[in-house]
Image 1: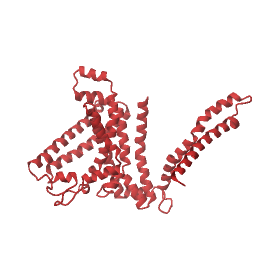
Image 2: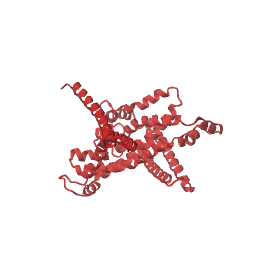
Image 3: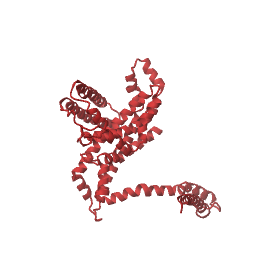
Image 4: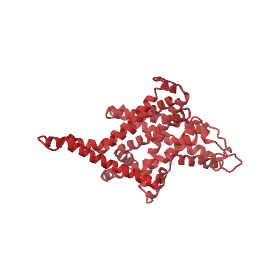
Length: 407
């Protein structure tokens, strides 16, 4: 049969099936189950009207349960079976946590969770604030949002070309190596590879230390709000401390490292740093998403509060950090958690760029390896359950915040 006829046939069957279901269910409800006649006609009509919406929703709810709930229970069941289908209890989880590759995946995912949502949200907030102040802001927003239209694999190919490396006697097509070979250890190299990065990283280090202190200060003063808010402040301060520690290591490295001038670098094989090269792809994509949402939130800040702050003598930084940011904090949290969920599912970028080699493995790629390469369904399902357990609290947090925003 021609594909067009097949499509037409499916449409007719689908629409006709829906119409038949609604007609038959109405007929059964009104004529057989609760007929509107006899001494109980009024009571039957009320009961039929109570049941009718649920009867109409039943097919959709049944399909949702089939597609959403069943895979969870099936995965949980597979995670306690071995390759031959024998019950092994928590054996798969025990073996998985004993594997160095799984520990590496978990550590890398934690690093991704700390860096990517923070960087994408911060860049998105900065872009939203700056693009609203310039005439060609809409054009700038379009450029920043454009990566959202590119698939993860497509973006990975673009960045793989940027990180590409060839022999020193050949022309470099990789942007970073082409720039890198321009440096020869002279004054320009000192300025661009030592002084400027040190100043930028140093400023970022101080900003993060200040942010951590701003989170902890209300707690040290005996304030800080409800218990959940206090826990959030402590968690944020811990994240800030970790980032500050990492940046301190970077600062030390910028000062002391001997840089291999004149030699093209294989960036994706540089352990530890290659994780950040992969993260740059996701930050590049998600910044546009964060910018659009936060730009709408910033435009919703009441003008009278900004005018009042301006009359009181507040400078632009004080207006931004003390007037605007607190009022859009709910939106910032929603953007942060949404990107966090995306990070937990990150798979395509790692598969396309390194395939988990050189210590870049992440949980989703580890699960793929176990399920479809090793055909170890038990351990693959166990790793899927770990990802689901990590995502679930963030999803609940996101739903709770979204409901608060709707009230």
